[in-house]
Image (cartoon, rainbow, N blue to C red; front, side, top):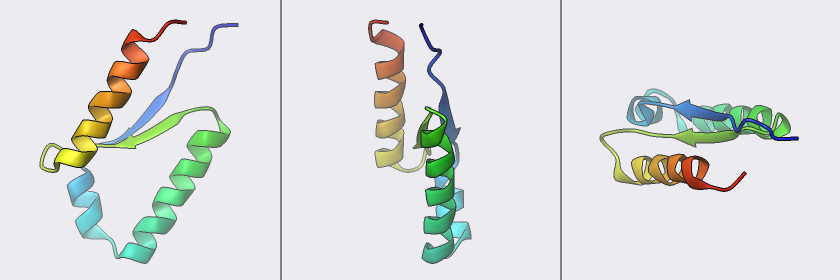
Length: 69
């Protein structure tokens, strides 16, 4: 059985990171991560203004685009 890979993308991570306190942000991220992983999805956050999330997004996109099924 070939499954379609699903990736949940949290765009504008810089706005998310600045809008919430660390405890709330950690709780929200943990809840999203749990939901995604229990359903076989990937979760990645991205932002144009920050390099690390953008790099992780590009890596995930490349992995899903060019892997063998």
